[in-house]
Length: 273
Ligand code: HPA
Image (cartoon, rainbow, N blue to C red):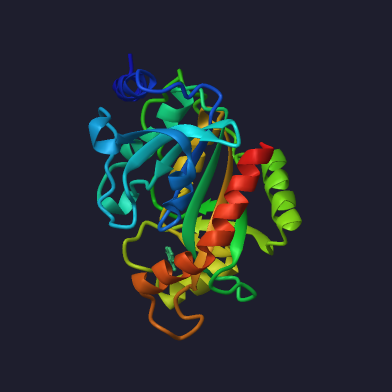
């Protein structure tokens, strides 16, 4: 059997012995957006570092805890933080948690992230539903022998982002009175922020936001048939737009400011899913 499949299976078996995640809603919480995880009821909390083959984040704003429990009587399996390609893992390792969720029987997934806005009508604090993505990371998590147990060699990406759940999410935002946008996410390798020139290029080819995660995960989720929606928190205007230098402090400050709305929205989406 494929070595990567066996690693995912071992990780999934370890988690399944500790909590029942079948039919749960999966949540991957990005930079500074991990607070929803603190509200999960009857939580079983597992450190990523205890799970066999599970990548452990090296970035401070990513806690590295897996929380299994309930929100509004819905089962949730929440990843507080993720690992990124820029940390040095290969793509297979970065996306392993998505495949583990699939093996655990997770029924749908909400992926969140912090991103830079290159659509000039956005501002720091804008919440964007991801409606499409551009892979500019120079790699693909499905490269190499196909793992047939997960999905086909050439998976479609037209419908990678689940339309029905995205619609449900936008309606939830509208009912809560939270203004949201829809846009295209372009994934860069990082860890350096983009240059102003790269951002002009991104704008030209139709990107509304740029970031360093999401893309490998959504490709993998589509490959294994995991229904997924993506939500970006625009934490800063992308390089060259405001003229200011970009800092991680700005990213973290914005996330903190919109945190409450973001949390409300995620919870309402889970309630309706
Ligand atoms: N670029 C890439 N990733 C990011 C940004 C950005 O401007 N802001 C938050 N994550």
